[in-house]
Length: 265
Image (tube, rainbow, N blue to C red; front, side):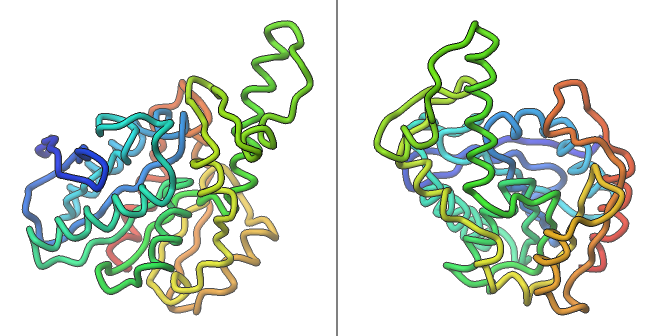
């Protein structure tokens, strides 16, 4: 199995943990930007398998734990998307100091939306392409789904008050959702994020993977129509939606297809 090593770099708010798969420094680099909340944890096994698959075709992979998540310093309640975009900037600067390679950004779910919003603010001079795995298209919709976890938990506990927790946090309150302390700072930094507002990405070579579906939805078709044909590779596959299930550790079709197409970015 290829080499793995973990290390810390200094972030804006505290030390950031990097998981480095393969030889380092490297000539060909892919940066993994993980999903949000529990989706990050549920995705780790499949993402690790994909990282090793990338190693086998000559890429080294650097996985970022955002500030307040994973093994990075800080607490989740002190984090927000502005800090996480700064984490990306610092990581890309660090990679630039280690190697001449311009990395590919690999965004999983919310990580794809975060990558797009980062590029909208900072430009794409430091990267060579994008890999998106079932990207979140709208931060507000993602948060609505996230807050449903709290409502479901309350129902399982015997009812609970009928409260709009999303609005409660938007209005300045804090609450716990699925073990995560959610603050107005975090919610307000994500709620306005939309893939359709990120126009820079449409001009970047992009591999867009839609696992868990056989055909593209009209929403996906509308979003991807903004890319120039020669800039976009768009695929569906029937691999399971591993970010939703604690029992899925493999997605061989997705990994094989991503590995096959990555070299064409």
